[in-house]
Length: 197
Image (cartoon, rainbow, N blue to C red; front, side, top):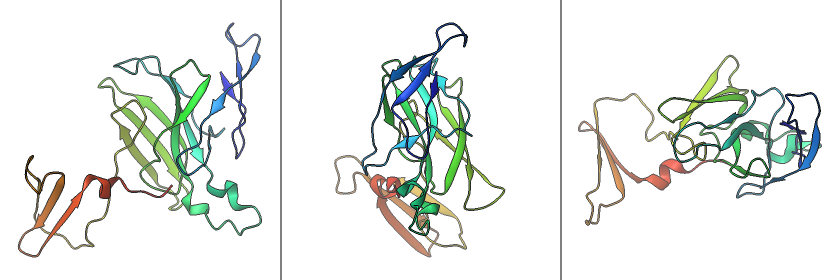
């Protein structure tokens, strides 16, 4: 299976059932993310995979990229650093494709992914914000979401302790981070999962 892709994806794939000797064209649906952007399987990215383990076994998963404002032609490319990697996945043999959550950091691009034996998805992406760097993330849900990080406080740091609020109390759902005697932060999971799309 090969995608017809550009800065905006085309709703077409080419599929071969005889190991590449002949090809047929099929129309597909690629769903937009919550902000209306379409992810495209970027040509320089690695090919997709079929999941082999767990409850998502058989899912098709392809590295993709969201070109926010589609390269901003005529707009000075003002959103260039907001482009991000993600993945698109299909549970109906490639007819419908759903976008994953964004890669945890913006400014990512061409990427590759692989399924590990422990059922995690390892994602490795190029970044165009900082030359010479790669970004890595993992998914524990078959490529639907990726681990997120948020800066709580600028350094320097010291010894820290992390605790979760107790169930059935007013602190339930809250995360507490104490740094020695200097400061304490309180936040919830929604704060960690916030991100630019």
